[in-house]
Length: 146
Image (cartoon, rainbow, N blue to C red; front, top):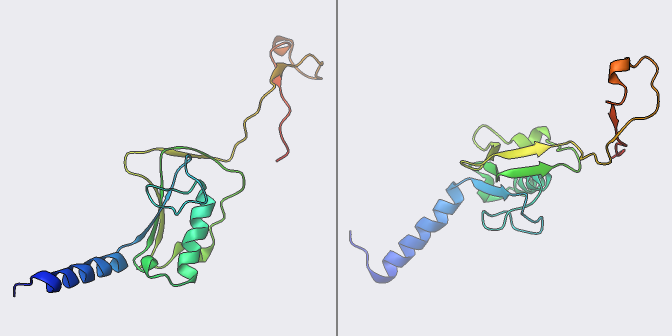
């Protein structure tokens, strides 16, 4: 059967519509992203926790885009966590609709829960039990509480 004109356009649009339903949902994250963004490759989110919450919302609302799974794709760079990442059991999805957190192809994301410590100085205060060879070689700094 040959389709032309309006028939071809309708079939093509139906094909595109169903292709979108059958594909997994992708949520992109980048250290250069912004949490007001939509989470697309062109407009990624900034925080992994935000992406997990977005995936959770897709599942909670039974969004059709999540029916084949959700991929949270991390672009390369350093993600400094301001709070722990909380992944709940339901965030895993199902066998037919899993949630997968992965690096973007060819990129190397680094997730760090550490804090940057500044103000290092050599300790001048005597420390009981410190070997004589270590005197003048011990560095100290104030660590933030949060």
